[in-house]
Length: 378
Image (cartoon, rainbow, N blue to C red):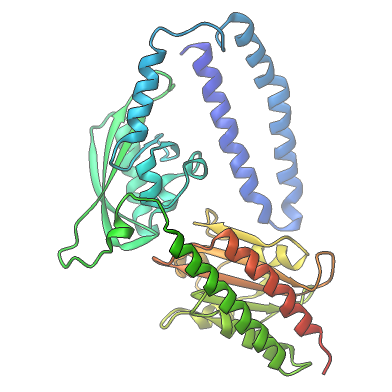
């Protein structure tokens, strides 16, 4: 392995470890010291190992400078990869995305910049992740091409055929796996073409409709808060949750208080384990604890940490059992530096469209209004 390949592999490992450190922000306060020590160790590694290695390679002419004779061909192959009409992804043996072409971004509903460095299994249903990861590792070991049926979280009822083949790009230190995703035709023709096709463009009319829906939601929330009984905090949270449930979120979970939280309202889909989530202690939910301490609103699409919202009485992660594909966790505070009156958590699951930044902003505004209603004396 050349010096450049060794440096690239070391840098890629460092990037993955940094991603793991970012996902550890929700650990209990008592364990933050260990996370901080790990972060300091990684910074020392950059200063003492990666930086000198980069300087040596630059001095030897391995980085930049000189024109590779096959650079034009590499550019052509890269352009072909990006313009292929089929959704294609390049992953490593651990199913971490290295590259995603344009068709794949439209098909999965995930931007290439967001997907790179994250496992492709994070975009699949939990039931398919183990099989996909196992087959990917087998292909990377040189055990032959594989093919299996998986389901995307954004289209859980539409089977997708994933074809895996080994590939050894000249710039990659190890064998990579090329993944081709092909939607399988429904016998009954129930899938919507706009969901199954690789077209990522969103009509302006759809955006206008969503904007109008947010305005209607804000209007309904304002009317509800103005008519809620003053001084009855539980009733205010219950009515606010009722406005958001169904039309905006599949799950609405309200926790009152900050230092001593109690769960007051849980609304979920029919047949969902609502009682188990209601019986959960808010202190066992890292996202809720962080928000109650005055943290910023959290928007997560395809949450990577299944324990981010704790576990139910059976020991199962709530995010997995509720099949959460996106979530919003917002502290209820009348102003940015003010006291937290409670925490509001919203889940979307199944094929429902993930929360957008515009929707997160709207919920943040409504959270301040809810906090003002909670503080209104009776």
